Image (tube, rainbow, N blue to C red; front, top):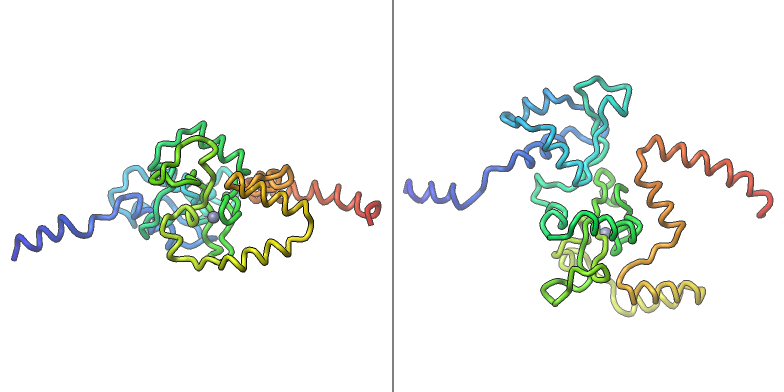
Length: 245
Ligand SMILES: [Zn+2]
């Protein structure tokens, strides 16, 4: 009996890692709420490297302001801005952590793909429409899976968010029918748009234009900077408006 229970402990539920515990605590704080480092130490006893764990979470799309960027915060306070990959709920860490795609290559692919998921189109750091408190974290995925002979060459790689990069997505999301896709394409309108779509199909990814790249880079700015850039563009847009209409 005792050997049974000890093997259950060994083989079964593992102790959650300190990263998972820190993620669980911070997620529970809620987006838009503050927490202090002391709160974190109290909630997760024995986390000596809370700073490092928070850095790990930042790399997975979690965002917190500190006093350096938000003057309403004291030196030990943090404001939770966005929840990224839920490692505490068993969500997979970005693939790039697990697979061997190097820093410069990763940056090159993300830049080429306009920091946008090539499957669903969400930009890095943007909230998912159906889960607004979660933001997209981009990883590098394979167009042709490695198990089917896909390589790590640039033309077989694309940016994917943590949801689309999840290999189990085929069973969790209802795919459209072939006829629905064909009908949608017929309704695209201009030949230019159809040519553009065809180019994307050939490449196996969206080929982002300059406007999209500008938008995606804007979307990656901190909120205050987004407002400033938007105000700067507003002046130009308003100025040009009467001439155009
Ligand atoms: Zn996606």
